[in-house]
Image: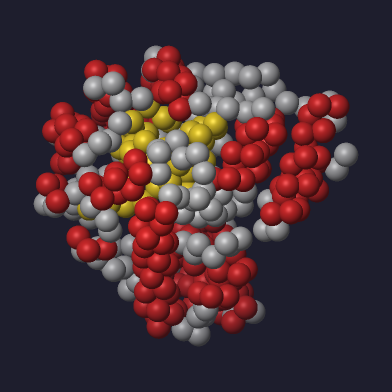
Length: 382
């Protein structure tokens, strides 16, 4: 069995190709042609797929395959603004005999914290927020207009970014509709897709490497030698493109207003209306909004939030021993507070940027001491 070719088909944009590959993988596991680890306590409950953006190009089917192969306790799908991968993911869980759950992530406006940064750096009042436990990618009729609004608003935000950045990066311009066809399976274009497209567009315009380096040096405001290094490191180059052109201070950055995103109350009503669980997303406890933890949790619970999620990798190891200690202290405080408030916890790595972990290191002492609570959170959803 050509396992590499099989894995490539699991990530094909054609759903029929993915389904056939998944069934072939199931047979491979059953026959022993594909090895898989025994089930462990390792898990990843926050995996973005290529329906929003996955740093490795993984489909929902591949994520389940990976969980089977690596012996995950459970696995969770979370995509930005859409539920496009939910039905495929749930079917793959059943086929592979893997435990899991499905979610959606977006950003919301919290009026009560309009003057405080929460978990979206530099954007007071704006918070990343999730719904977890979706049982279908098809929403109830009463919630369809809201779901359409989320998709439309996300698309419009990205279109505005491209409009602004095209003017700056000309002649390396892109067509967002073409990006949707080439870089995504179902048209949900994110900033990360756009960065890949700009990298490819510049390489097509400037075939000479020296000219390409000069272009990126000027546009990204880096030394020529640094630009030359970036060209040889596509992942880092795309990260710098995003940072320099699309984040705060960049030509493509559009400062969000309260009207840019739904309120926490409205988003939670939508999530609950779909039969899922409104879920607080936690960054690191260092912002003004998150540091006032008791008030934050009380506010969320008032609006129906009933679970929480975190990305442990960014809360265990900091840039210095002092930073690590501060992060771990906040991690402990947050997890204990959630336990006291009876908020089940889901932990994961996101996978929405190249280089992010496939699974957290649950043997790290800073995380291992919380493993029982994290597994209890998984069991609440699976």
